[in-house]
Image (cartoon, rainbow, N blue to C red):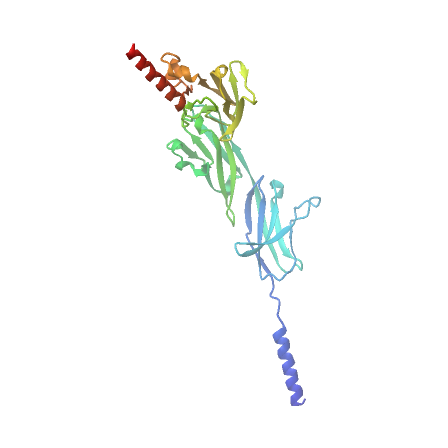
Length: 352
């Protein structure tokens, strides 16, 4: 072979070597065992390394062939490429082996998923007695840890529950001592399950109680005006959320041109607006808050601004309305008019 031909062959081989970009083999990894809770999505991630565009698939020996085929989604999670399988509303029938594999079958990852059951057991408030909530897991050997929250806060950070909380059965049982109606609400049981990966699930546990008057809400004074409106707000709470209706005497009030009802802190119709109150509008108004646990009444007294200023005209009004009574007082312009009238009377009396 001549020198020129040898050089040409070497150059060709060098070009082929430079242009050849070998495809690195794809490989898969991930958890070998994970737990999930019945009723929640079952999420299994298969980590993908050196992805070369090869098709991936999920399969399960126990998968019902009549069910829709298992579908995965290739995505990035915190900078890691994963092939994710999601089964919505999983149940015990979804427990078993799952295989993430390449189309050519050259790489495979096997994951065992175990679906456990959680029983969220709520209760009712009997004021002065203990109330116990439970978050029971079956089987109980898969639970890693259980914590309780309310309104997004750990229970030990809620002042009203201080020194009244008792936890048993590895935190699966929560007892509120000397329960109050204000303890009612939705408590969240956060469960971290054991496995190769830690997964946290949240279950709502409801403590029910009859409606009660929220004593933290002050009874604001309502000032009258010659023209305008008066608004009464019914300060009630309860779990389940109470329904509110308003009465005047035997009549149940309905929204119309005179009465407007709006929501307060999620409680429907808890605010009553009386448009341009006149003599026939004075008297007692009762708001009733009711749920399946019971009911509570709150009474408001709307009186004439004139009577409110006359000694003895309405003793309850002068005392601020015993109970939940609210009084209508004179507006500043009316007070100025009365003051001017009193001044004139004093001058006339001196002249006489």
